[in-house]
Amino acid sequence: MQQTPIRIAEILLGLKDVNLIGVEDPADEGSKAPLRVHIECRGERPKCPVCNGMSYSKGTTSLVELYDLQSFGRPVRLIWHKRRWECRDGNCSSPSWSDVDTSALCHKFPTISLQ
Image (cartoon, rainbow, N blue to C red):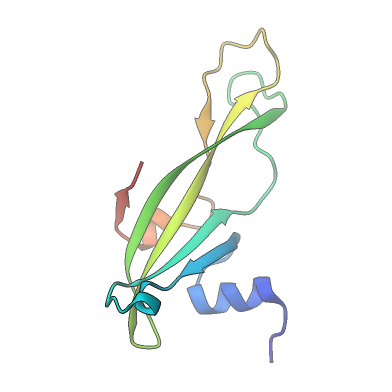
């Protein structure tokens, strides 16, 4: 039996390399809307694609909705929080970039951009 929260989320979602941020249950308010499971990519801080230097998070995210999931007979929407990154080198010409899909999220599920 698994008791590690990260491993439990991996098993329930069928995905690796993601952190579970939280879950919204609109049915708590009498809605028949799907569960909304918020996730983000887990992994090393990306290197700058131009100079291979260190990057930092800009503190902003884009939300991508991944849908057509089921959990215990209920519809589920994965909400992927894609982080924006920027090169630490002020002289680098690289624009900011977002998380890369490290767990085949977008290949496994259809997507709808929310932001």
